[in-house]
Image (cartoon, rainbow, N blue to C red; front, side):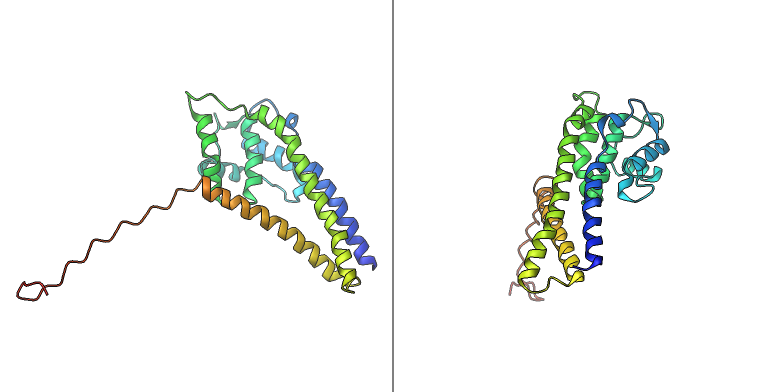
Length: 219
């Protein structure tokens, strides 16, 4: 193996570990107080800086979430802890689903938060229990990416191509794409089955009336 390949392996192992540990906000990092949109943007963007996009969440994006029905409108321009959690989850959904699909997924929860009659879902308590599960999923996914390197190396040795660095990186990227594609396809099928409106059956066309001759008689 060349020096370039060693750098690639070290990079992917280091970054995979960092991402798995820092791509989920810990429940106690959400303040139990209301914040304005720019404050929420700064909080979430700084905590999720591992994504490498600054800011990851902007004030205009938050407004767009509300406009598209993904998030309950703020009270006096301020967002509470549960709304902040929802924003993090929306960012996660945003990487995989279209806006219309996200609106369908989020609609029941937005309606629940706005209802004066329904028992409210305690999203903070739910998130406290699920955050460790999601972090574990991140670690397992990162571990699979790292493990794919050894699998691909073995397959390349069998074909005598183990000195081709560019091909090895391509195959690792392809392995990642296959896992993403599999999960995405399953998710999209689930959306179609349970969230999309069933296609309306087309009305039957009226039977054609027999043509008549100019005299008015049926032909």
